[in-house]
Length: 340
Image (cartoon, rainbow, N blue to C red; front, side, top):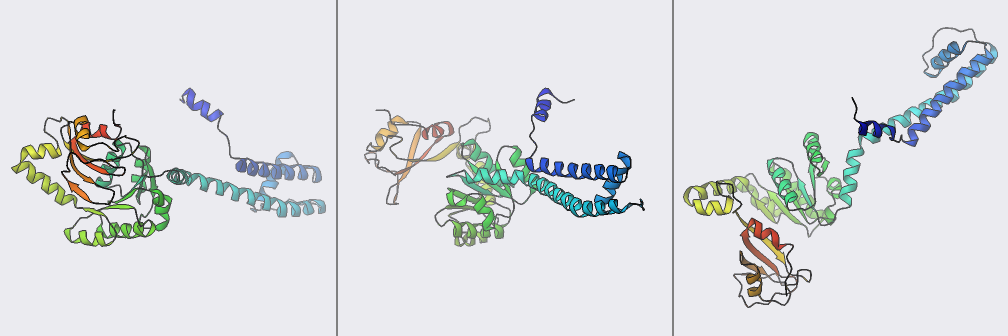
C-alpha cells in the first residue's frame, strides 16, 4: 500500500522528453502500418496490427498473399518503420544508461561545487573514522573507494562519494583536488597510498597530504611520494595501550576516561585574522579570555614555530596558535571573537 506522498510523487513525476518522443514515434509507426494494411488489403484491424508488428520486428510469419500495392506499402514500412523503431530503441537504451549513471554524475557535480574541502581515499575502518570526525567538525569532504557497496553506504549517510580508483588523475580531478585543502590516503595498502600521494602531489603541488602506513618501512617511502604526514595506526594503537598500562592518568587525558566523560585532551589551530579580532593583542589577553586552554606553540608568518611563547608577544595577522584543552573548550575557539 503506497503512502499518499508516494502516490503524489508518481502523479507529479515528469517523464524525460526524449523518452516521450521515442514512445510517440513507435506508436505512430505502428498506427500508420495498421491503418495502411486495413485500407489497402481490407484486413481487420487486429490482422493489420499483427502483420505490422511482424514486419517491424523482422520476425516474418508466413505468406499473407499481399497485393502489389500491399507489397509496395510493406517495403516503405520496412525501410522507414524499422529505421524509426531502431532510433527509438536506441534512445530508450541511452536514457536508461544515463539513469544508471545519474548518482555518479550527481556526486561529481556536488564535488565540483566545493572549495577548501577534504578528500578521503579509502572507506575502510580508518577511512570511516576520518569521515566521522570530519563530519563532527562540520567540514565538507569527498570520499573515494573502488567498492560500490561501501560507496553506496557512504552516500546513504549523506556523504559525497565517488566509486573508482583514487590513483587515477581523472577521479581526483572529479573530487575537486585543485580546490581541496587536503587529501588523506588511508587505504589498507601502502603501495596504493603511495600512488595516491604521487598523483595528488602532481595535480596539486601545495596541497596537504596525510597518508596511512601499515609498516614502518613504508613511512619514508610515503614521505618521498609526497605525503606531509604519515601515520602508522598500529604504532599509535600500541602507544595508547602502553600509556594506559604504565601512565593511566595520562592515557585517560589523551584517549578518554573509562567513565565516558568528555575530558580528553584535544589540540586545535587558531589562525589570527581580522575575523576573530585578535590582531594586535597579547597572548596574555588570549589566555585570560580562555583560561581552560593552553597555548602550546605559535607559528609566525615567517614559518617559525615557537614553543611556549612569551605572554607579551603581540599577535599578528596570519599567526597560527597551537592550543590544547578539553574537547568542549577547544571546540568553541573556532567561533570565538575578541571581546573588547
